[in-house]
Image: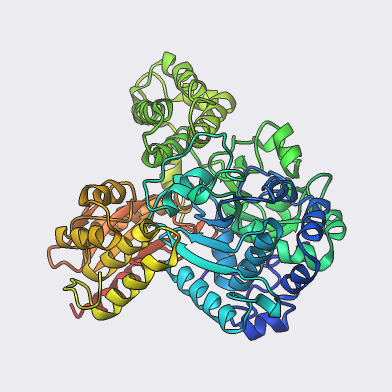
Length: 437
Length: 166
């Protein structure tokens, strides 16, 4: 069972029911559950969207698109049925927040899905979980059945004239399916290959109908926004970045875990105070701020507010909120290699720059790290990565290229240290460290 | 497919699959879950299972194979009774995932995607399984094991070995 952590600086909204038995529907109701959905049924779509816009909640999957605005793009009239699709394909290395939401608070996902459905006029919602999360799918299935039994789902939800159904769905192992158009393909029973945009899913999505796709954390936040009011929610965060975020701190810190903090919270404080600092009193070498696809930050760059705009200004991205902390024992070339190995494995092969680019990067970095590198490889690695940027249907190509460029740019010296036929000069140091707890 | 038609699957699974195709706006949406559930029962996707699933959905076997080859969890060959999946992706790597994978190789005497001769264990190095804050993490079939050390891993393996009665 994943360990739950706590820190006094946390502002617990999405995580407020973690560890409180809220998988039980009656307990969830006791803890103010389904109040927001009732309000939403009563007050209607325009009110929901106005509150969501006021909240300045931005998508927690990584792109940071304003949720209220996304919902408002869905046409009011549509010949084809509209759908809500919840993205629980959480697969970005460094990210395990949705894991906890499904485990501890499945009803909040259901409630958020109902609200999203009411906002856009959909009658069906899908909750897609990655295949590895089978035990969480079982929890989700039970929660959905309980919500049907209470009349919160199905015909005439909460005693109204409105109908809403939710279907939970499992994937079967594919990072790329976390990209929204590939997610729809997968749900339609196909290979998870991305679609070209436009048309955007809000207009032509699942089964050709207008579709809103939100990350599971975004959806789990929605009931909290409505209960406290959009403006009050916005005040918790920083400018244009409303509310709180589940930050998953992993790697070389004393107290790894998922912490819920206001948007804009200082990254240095998150690492050194909330997560207890670097393990064993070692020196910090680098931070990957928002999942493996976000460019690395140097220790000198981490006095930084964690919101989409501030991290963007610092040359990286807030991404999925998965903060990966690296201490002085890490070989950055090896880390770059492990990162690209992942993207090479996950590239679907549809777009040539991504398929070939990730493969060549993996080959080059493997040879380079083993001591067979040449000086020109360093620029070549960067050149390969730069030529993948923006040239693919989905952002997987960018997700592989951006961190690679960052590693070469910020740790060029470590690449140079690997030259002249030397095998990894950092390897011995790392192997001697007792890395395991 | 009606209940009277011959099926490879247990009555429970057959009933579940019968229902699954009716849940979605199109039958084909049931394909990926159906493949995974069939694999759970049979251990892997046999030719006969692929054929039955193609019929249930109403698509060709080729279509089914085309889809299943995309998903990393789906397989067309057997694995061990307990499939040990060690994550070595970045967060796990930083906390000893690679060493843990090496440890499992030595302990089980098999490599990546290999099965022990007694069929009890198979081993696989996998990509991120979503347990980064509790690294290093391993999944055995669908069960998560977090915060592992080589010693803790031994205890986990022993437990499964006992369950297998070996």
